[in-house]
Length: 121
Image (cartoon, rainbow, N blue to C red; front, side):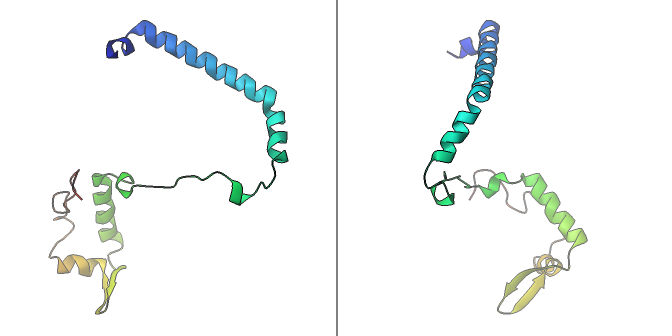
């Protein structure tokens, strides 16, 4: 089955077929747009409670790569080290104070020290 996927003639046929289907769909939309709009307007109880749900499930691990996160933390350390980043019963700590308590500098920070490896939770 995989060998069929890599054949040039199959790829060109599939590409032509997809172009044809896309053209047919565009034609369908042009010809039936008004009818579908009228049908949608005629639907009773058309409000936000009857609309379709959109899934906003996001994995934060997919937001940025390890390298991007590392660069972000280092730039925050350079530019905004006086921002308060931690609060507890004893008080508030700035980003610089957090790193001082960890006995670390921006130069000590890397992917290994942050324990950012794939597969770990």
